[in-house]
Amino acid sequence: VSAHDYESVCYDDRGASMDSPARINFVDSAETWSVGSRCAVLQTVGTSSATGYCFDHLCYGWNGVRYDGVRITVTASETVICSRTDALSSKTLSSISNREIVCPDIDILCGTDGPNFGTCFWGHYSSAEGKCVCTAGYTGSDCNTRDNTTDVEWSTPNPVVPAPTYWKPTLPTYNSVCMSDFPVASYNGEWTYVANSEDTYTLPA
Image 1 (cartoon, one colour):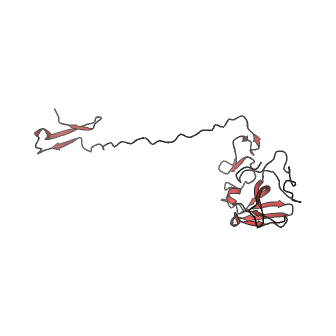
Image 2 (cartoon, helix red, strand yellow; image 1 turned 135 degrees about the vertical axis):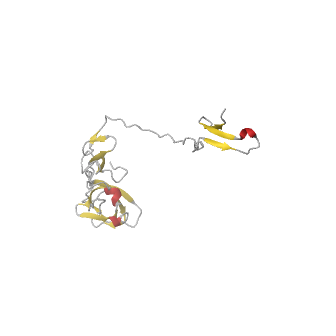
Image 3 (cartoon, rainbow, N blue to C red; image 1 turned 180 degrees about the horizontal axis):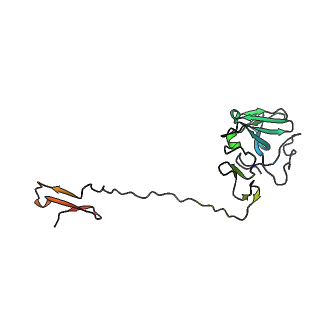
């Protein structure tokens, strides 16, 4: 099984060496399925032909924030070192004829959440929680125990419709206002504020 993202493990519960080396026909291939294995891309030199294989990865140089690089064991006689600056570039292999390996993005492959690469099978290590955080369907300290007891609900979020807003006048600072010199005599006088649904002023009776 090779999951779609780099942080997931290349793992086969039938054994770490299942299908290896015959699957890729390399004499001393180190393709393996284990908690430290990840999918690496090998391509034929000078072509766009590329295939993913499971090799043991060892991230190194944790500085408290991120790793400096990764060591990828391709064959029993060759380990490729990919540094941070090598990301997405290719390196020609010496132990496999006419093949080169594509170096991964270090942060994507190794993660940035603590110096515990290769600790968790089906999940990732959280330095905040100090343990493996398992993906759905797995449990245990290393996320390698199937969990069929918990249902995972799939929910589709409802679109958020903003509530309409209405203008509301600011409440007056004073509770009365004096009107004078209006042609309509009934407008003149001290109007008192009445707090109601219409926020009106009225003349005293």
